[in-house]
Length: 229
Image 1 (cartoon, rainbow, N blue to C red):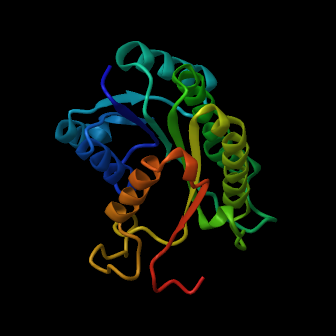
Image 2: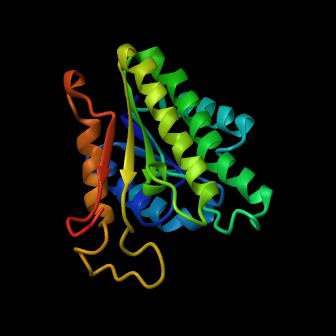
Image 3: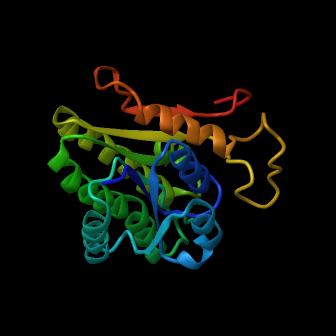
């Protein structure tokens, strides 16, 4: 079977840069998103496979991993890059928004990690990476649901690393501590110092994946050098 990687929560920006970095390293790609129509240009560019899936749905995730195992074998790398941000004053925010944040950050991360682990344990190797955020290290005012989801994702990664590391699976949590260039309106991709560059982040993920198992990183935090913390 060919070497391949799965990116859950695929789209433009970081996930596209990750896909390109993996392809350049010789891996085939399975790109997972709710709306795969938006992935058409990237799929054509990389010869990737796009699969529609709601990562917060256990039945859908089980189906996803069953199909990729049948068609490609055991993945070398699985990256959870999905998320959901809800903002608002604690006295006003809709509890359904809080539930969505927990479902799409914490539950979806768990289901993805579980599905990946079930396959990788058969081979005794592989990498499972979770994309985190500043909100997983410190909560900000007006952003409680996002902090809840990202803190949970960070705890999940720590638990899985301790459980799966001794079995040959590298689990890591990557804190993206800053804005990513080109991912939101008003952010100039040319401002190399102010925002994290997607290609630079992707290079760090790939370096993490290639670490020798006697010197694995469990948590990596990335930020622009001008960041004031």
